[in-house]
Image (cartoon, rainbow over all chains, first blue to last red; front, side, top):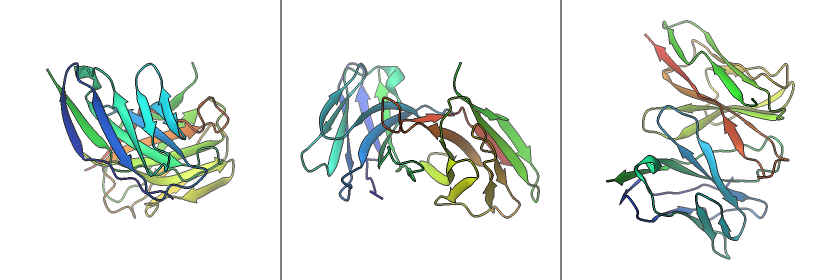
Length: 112
Length: 115
């Protein structure tokens, strides 16, 4: 299973772009990279998922280099409500019963 | 509405007592998971199940037990053997055939406090 490493915390200001990088040096061929957001006392919720290159949706972008040993979640123009913990999850999500293990997450604090 | 329901939301237990946390989903998902979260920490996998009547240990299964008698239900029992059970417990399910491969759907969690 691919182990992930993320920064423990990051501070930003409203309106800025936040980039969180996740390292996953031993990612396997069938592994996807998925990011989740968690607010206090709530379950994590899906943000974005990718396999290679760049993926963009209405809330974030995910950049994955060719070697796939890292990935960067980009949150454009953050607001106070984006203060949360962000988790990078790497695994073969299509496989039934895959043991999906989370890393420690990155605590993002958005300041006014 | 489809989703995952965990109950109870808050639970207090005396030391030495077993307690069972409920997790029900109506998403028709095959795979279900239990995670534990301690204050300021990430999620740690307790048990997971890919199909009815089958489940596997996660990273911290000691002191916990589960059953999967129905597709919709995956209850977690915290036994008296669990040394430090006070934590926030999260249940999740996953549909490997969804538009996003393997997106996890989480319940709202159950907060267990041992007195």
